[in-house]
Image: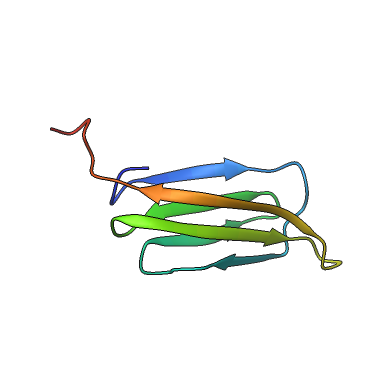
Length: 72
């Protein structure tokens, strides 16, 4: 995703807890129970992990933040 841009990601599982490995690269906010707001803050890559209320890990993915080439 481009730096300083954001995305909303939907999941079919109810997510209760979110962790970001490197919060300098991306910021994540839980919107309700099944949507995430992800903002690219700096160039680089980081992992995002999602858990349900019963402690089950439902997703682990990498966010790659790059230059905004579409804006050039």
